[in-house]
Length: 97
Length: 97
Image (cartoon, rainbow over all chains, first blue to last red; front, top):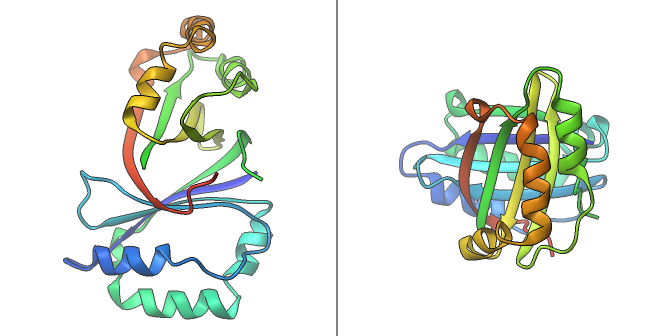
C-alpha cells in the first residue's frame, strides 16, 4: 500500500508551530490508513509525517480537499521548502485499519 | 511516543525472504502500537520497519520474547548487518490504537 515517510523543514524557531498545525485532528481523510506526525530529537527543525494511503490517487485527492488546503496554507509560511524530503514505500504488512 | 523507522539490509537476493519473515503475523507485542513492514522501490535490498511503542522499555522487552528471538534467529542469516539504519522519532499525533 502507498506509504510516505517524509520531513517538513520548519523555518528556524518555527518547528513547534508547524508541529501544532500538522498535529491538529482534522476532518476524515478518505483512503488514509495512517498519518503519524513525529519529531526527531536530532533534527531541531524537522517535522516528520509517516502516512499510508489505500492508493496514490487517494493521497492526491486528499490534497485537493478544502480543509487540507486550508491547513497547507497555514503551514506554508512556516516551511523551509529546501528542507523537504520524502521516502516512498510500499507497505506490505502491519497496516492499521 | 517512542517511534522507529529503520532499514534492514538483506543480503543480495534475500530481500523477499527477509520480508516474508518480517511480515508474518506474530503473537501480540505488549506495548506496540504500530509495526509496519514495507519496501522502497528504489532500494532493492532493504526491508523497512516503522514501529511505535508505548515506551522504549516496551520495545526493549519485546526483543526478549521467545517468539521474537526465534524470528530474529531466522532472519539473521539473511541480513547484511552493514545495511542497518534506524531513525528514532517521538510520535506526537496520529498514533494508532
